[in-house]
Length: 394
Figure 1 (cartoon, rainbow, N blue to C red):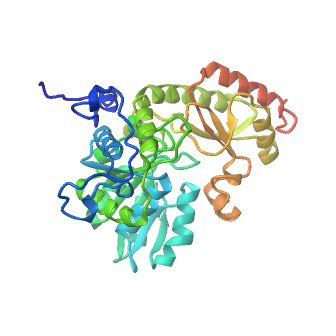
Figure 2: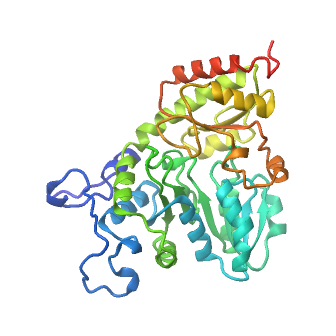
Figure 3: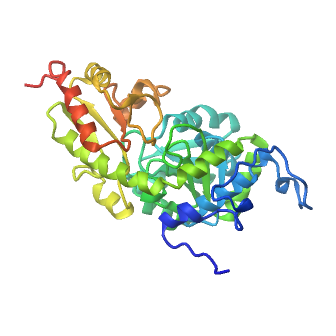
């Protein structure tokens, strides 16, 4: 039989990691809903095929597919994005170690770093992703890792990722990046020299708002270390959730194309609207890191944030008056979603810390779905009419 070679990511999403030969000829990957499997002369505990050890057939198929689409040696699925993040950090950081971490982060990551790491004897310093010259001053002899986000949540900043990789290699640090906002369609960190790429599989990878999952992607050596820690912490992904993530990933390229195109059009609409104070989207020429994003990314993703004139009151009224987007947390699904980070994803941060990062009470984060762009723009335009007085629009 001719060896199968998959060159482009669109093909890898469909065919990488699939059973060969197919199980009983099934075109779709079956669900192996079994907690344990017959032993087959495994060499050690971590090799035993058991659902908690994240090595069921459904998990293994995902590992191969995830590694293939980011150009990595190996990958690991987890029970959630936070399981991926916390387990990875605790794999490479131990009592007495120090972490350099980007100052604008997903709220859950920020809380884990600021409220939990110290209980393990791990210290940290925040760094400005756009000021590489300042990082050396915060590095210590016990610094072991550097952690950033591809596009920050919710301000959509794009750090100097080339500098992150260079800095990490120079000082022997493990470089980690949360690639959730971009997805592998727009950015593949391993190809750019990062050691580990992390995802909340709940978001773009799955894309259908029906599971919670996470992923860690990198070299076989590093992924093996993360797996061993995960085996003990227990953040495994159930076979049925693996099946849904596996199925969702097959349409990732198609979905991201619409997310990318629609978000750019909506961002331009918002930027030109007289009810909007500012818009955060790397695809806009006005974005401070637009040129960098254009050099790094194949697309600017479906995430943006903006602040209507009139602050919190205007933001709340705007969200009440849209009819297509759903007001909820999370992102990356086929449905457009709106949330106010100060009240949801970043509510655990102090008002002072949010203010430093530009996360105002009136900031609205938009996860642009795959609906017709024209319908979304018309819906937004009508919602702005409802806040005309609040936003002092003539």
